[in-house]
Length: 112
Image (cartoon, rainbow, N blue to C red; front, side, top):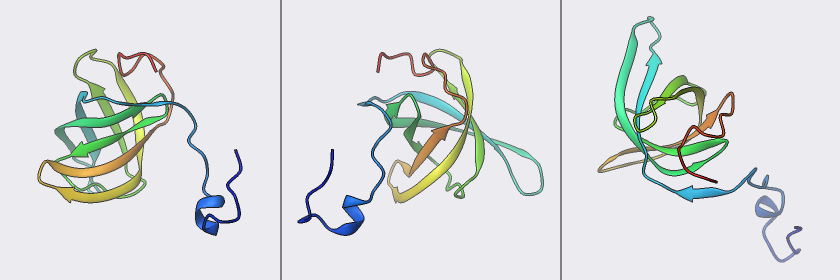
């Protein structure tokens, strides 16, 4: 699909989504290492999931490019992931775009 010339240039050149997405609240455990090496763990949840990642809500603000491990608390499966986008802090936590490093089609427990 090509955007018409009436769309702003940044929208016309924006990369397209890589696959279908689904609004889904999935409880997750978020684990990451700090700069000094200790392992941190916090509960979180998703707003949107896809085979490639999710829109994650985290109680802690994570840095862009932060590597982490997500564990789906419903299926007990874990994946390695990275923070690729940081949104705003809302009352329920920070919105963050997460990309799954090694795709696991069954990770979310929903058919996408």
